[in-house]
Length: 400
Image 1 (cartoon, helix red, strand yellow):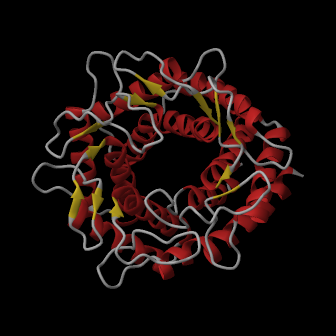
Image 2 (image 1 turned 180 degrees about the vertical axis):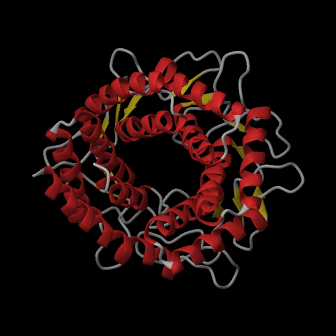
């Protein structure tokens, strides 16, 4: 019974990926005038030709289409990946100080040169995935250079972990935040999660001793510092000494981390760490069930002090819910987790997929009304969570 459920799930998400998600980014986001990809399409489908272009968006396009080509072998995906790779190296890469810029204007000129470690990590993630399909040694070399810059400037040799952000010249900044909604703290769960993700992909292709050591340290940072040992939710914000400054539960980050931490342990290949992480990741997935609604969707977040609950269903949270619970099913064999994964996908298919205009809505509210005030594509709305969900299921179904 479970096998047939998985086969149906694979078939449905593959269809979604190749007929809706990826074509949207190829046909609607390719900037034929100024190069690369447009910086924004709003929730009503309007393209902003003069929108700024973010590094995170470009790097996520690079990863998504590289991964899609690796698994599905469509030449069009390779072409799009190559376009993103070229634009990243020619425009976002800082040839003077190293690293990647945070933001360009629509013409591809630097607008904000700060070195957000989150963006450096995504550049590594995209470049390493491109290397996996092309063996492009230039991309591997730049990914290694970015790794060394992160280690040189961001790694806390005294207390472990990584500091958030630096100036273009790798100097100190007062405002370290990724976005206005974040706390201005020196260390965050979110940046550490995506450094972990990037280092995992780099270690697949470059078995360096220092990288191995730092990947192991990152896993330990999560298990020993970031994961709350009482609730198994993730603490989100920390000061330099790892004092917890968190005021919320982020259900999407919980469930996303539950499979990314385990993936990192698998790639590292240490059986002791794998066994330790397996238990913790199942506890994280179990704690994440608190955010599940009766319709199978996952709410966004809950704040401790105010008691406020944001019950909107964000696109990326639902995508990670599908993968996270599928991973928990793989680790535990419990049918409950497979059912939760399927229910989340059913919710996505019914309420978040824009079957008329392509891609997914940013979110739906508690009344299941689509949010068209937020972007359909933009700085944070990328073909990353949804395409990765589909690709993970396609790959996993063959081995489960």
